Image (cartoon, rainbow, N blue to C red; front, side, top):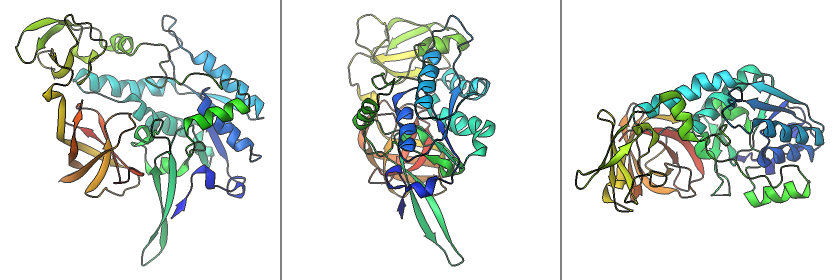
Length: 374
């Protein structure tokens, strides 16, 4: 097995490679450029344009992002090119998001943005000319030699970062094997504080810039407004689960997710979203902070996507949202890419449409992910 995170890469392994860096304007991807520059390399940098900046009523931070990216590329003598993937984003990722929320599911646009845009549409436009595509994701990779009677081959694995809070393998768990083969994560072996320290030492213009929150391109745009723009509003009843009492009205079931507590705006709270009846457009809530119905221990997933073609074994760890915790479980095959996850502990807020990301029992190697169907 060969560890191929950036800390173990020799300059000689990179100097004959054509390298593209996806430079967003944030501190993480900026330190990626530094990591190459300190090895005497000057990769081509690309800023992917996917924001809705033509809509004047939407506040977008993309102009500032591009200014930051331009300054960093110039500092290290790298070429910067803007690649417009706006239409691809709205045709693919936005369609995926709206199709899911409209039927009451909980999608993850960032997961599909990595698969369809950063390692997809970008590859079709520019990335195909490069041997490696570098990003600022907190993730690492490993190569394993697979022996067979006829020949030996290399198997590449997506692996977790040493920073459990920032680890982003869950956002990468739907990429294809050919995308992982070209991916390199130069800061994946760092923790966030180390990246900040490097940025400070290098006097990068964005060294103290806050991390972006929420969907990858929205900036200051509210996610609710993003959904409202495409699906509008559809008022319905809010019902207390235990009593059947109507406690208020909602604006449309697609604005809410199972397990949500904050930002509900229903009087007499706190309330918890515990169930959605999509056909009747009814939200069911509970008064308790941790109602029994908000937890699940066994749940099915379908459409499991294995990144490199290797399927997980019985004993695994998993995530259903971007948190530092990995949950131990056993995995029961159910045929045709379907599994039943038997968690060792009850999990809060399991919602249909979420990706369940599957790791080995050491939460080191990421196998891939499937969609929760409960």
